[in-house]
Length: 486
Image 1: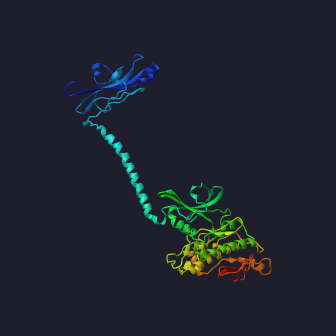
Image 2: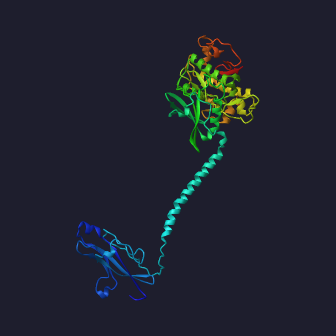
Image 3: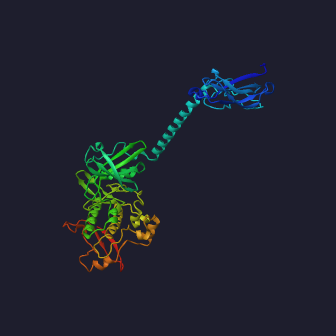
């Protein structure tokens, strides 16, 4: 070879393992090429069988010239038992020598090219090390930055001042509530501010209302109302405790109360009708609970109980005990009236649209205590209508359970729908005509007018806190429900 030309030699291993190791004697083949075929009097190209002893390894080889970057194949064919080629991949030109095992043909050689090209400069070995080290670090840094941004965004959206830094407070019946095992069993209801679970606390069932963190204002308000002096009453849902569960942004707010298997009055009326006596008992205990809630009671052993407006009275928020005694629940929107403090003017159209009083729908609320209490009374009248519409006291069929105004505006009314029906058309729920036919003429069916049913079976002094309900006839066939609060 002269100075102007360079001869590079590469050997390619084909089938070292299959025949030699397993002792097979089949013939191996290689591509054949001879640039000097005319001089050597051989074929120029073809396939050459490789013969040899079965304990010797057989390979394909190729030789070529690199003249100023132009590759010229010189010879290809079989090569027998060259230990320098065993499983190697090396040479002056990267990728030209590549021995492979258990392969019949090897076709690895530089491409035929007449164009000149510069040799590829291999990258320093530390380049790959640096690349593989930096990429994971950058990914981890990105994840940390994103997580921190989400945390800050969430924290700014909900000011921490609304949630106590420590688990809330008034001591529950047992000061060891946080140490007792509390097991969630099944979801019983879902509402606007969370879901209610049936749970087991030691040997008794309790209800756990779970609020997401974005509804912590409702959770805190309900907790504060339950914590007021004098809130233990037969007709107000029994409060057991409140807890925060979780850490950082993954926080659930728990409110633990007594559990009542019969559920809400709404659910009960969907599946059951009530007798006259049951109607009176449910209505009486429900009214007692609301009357106590509205009452301002100073001088209690544990302090002064202020008057409280519920602001979301509806059949879903009245629970029934096993003996059909009613108790009022869900104080997430409740408003307390303390001496010397104004209710303010930030308490507009809240509550469930279907149960909103006309003045609430009109946006003409007088922000005084009595105005808020009357709003509760209007909603209580609608709940009494639901109860009376499922009573079997009058002869004739009992209607399917319906929500107030459901017949006029369906199950999902908008605020505009309610304004049109209640404010502009001045409609109210009615009782059907079969009550008229039997209520007056038959003493046994005393459902047209009922006075003092609050104290029907109890000889007690009637006070200014007692509710007075009655029906009066407005049209020939229908009886709208009216109520008064003294």
